[in-house]
Image (cartoon, rainbow, N blue to C red; front, side, top):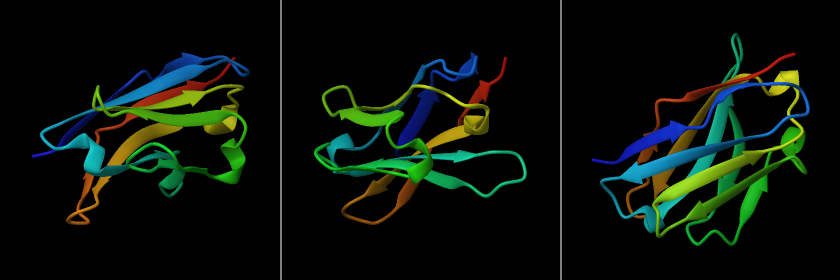
Length: 118
């Protein structure tokens, strides 16, 4: 069974940076399309960034373009989200999701809280 475990969340001041990590186990990581989502209180879960299996294609929601960078290290079974120039509106629980390219099954992590506040 695939397990995804996020880490790296916390409290940061506006303009600061955080790097989230999502470590995968129980599956061939290189066959997972990986995504980062976020959900703020009262809001629907929002897709923030996506990365292809090889890491050569990435996509971002407009609100984070130029500030966030998604990357992956298939040798370490880990996907990252580097978040710079953080804003209060980035405050949310951040989740990683992996989708198997063979079965289409989605796997979710438990989430990590990011709070941007002075």
